[in-house]
Image (cartoon, rainbow, N blue to C red):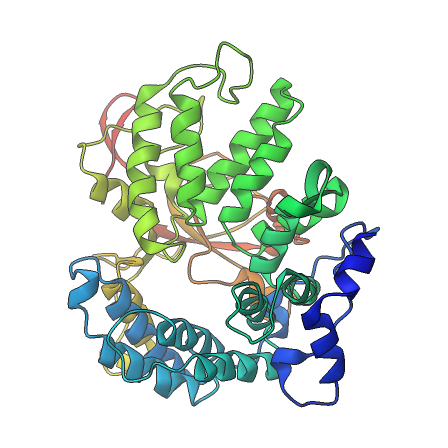
Length: 437
């Protein structure tokens, strides 16, 4: 019945009529199948076009200007931001293409106000094989930006994007499929096994908001094991930049639904709740761009004790964000310019000193407290996904390093090499630490 309704929609007929067209916006796609039997996790990073270094620099400069927290949105130099994104997009930088399209459709004062041009940039990214571009086209169909678009065509694009590896599409469809019953009118269906696989795949790719939905799913049995699993994935979501996860944990540690047995924390901890809420307020500004891989430096999960905090939200953010050592040589500034742009945008914190050389196999215990950066060999099949600028963790001495398999990644802990970046917390008295930068 559902399939018949989908097949009879105007946009499906339009797409079928235009199937010979070269326009990607009207690509003829299979109808959305909410009751599919299985889903294979595909990672977007393994299927992206190479990025030109100069284009990446322009992109990072535009991003730094766009995200600068010290300048109010209306006061930013939107024409310059537009020009930098345009220059990067013209060199086939796919993120710049999608950001440029979004900017064209915004209300900010930029030189171009042409929805068709925005669609064309997304189409170009689609032609480059970018999964997130197919997801964006689905959004354009859903919102009527593409002429004749509707929910039927949108879900077809979302399905295509998810199968290609788009974490955005995987998170959206995963949340739509993890219901207990079908309600197509409200956009959800009962296909929990596939929904969970999609959500886990999105989290594995670093999409934090997917962890918020996954936490709700994990917690459903409300056994101690289920609650702990939910707590851990929500905490991981905060590390991945999700304001939603931070808000959820702020609510949980405040004791919400404690009397009914639906609270996953199991007790009230207002200090933890306060820190999650403060962090969530900041993450909301960055809309998922700011990552906090070193969150355990300021807000470890219980039963670990909380380090002493000065009450300034920026202290929490600065200590939890990714770090970068100072440049090794001013003679090669181009090597550090992308990181400099990330630092200017507030996404990275540059360390004052270069740490001593200390490395460790991920299968061993941590030899020194502090921030560690993780890498696998360049030849590893998941190197493009795993070796990110924010792949770091704050680890205490004698503790285990994060296991990639716990992050839904098919990587052995022994294949990971961790490099110490320093920045441990400061010991005040015996077993009492201050958050230190």
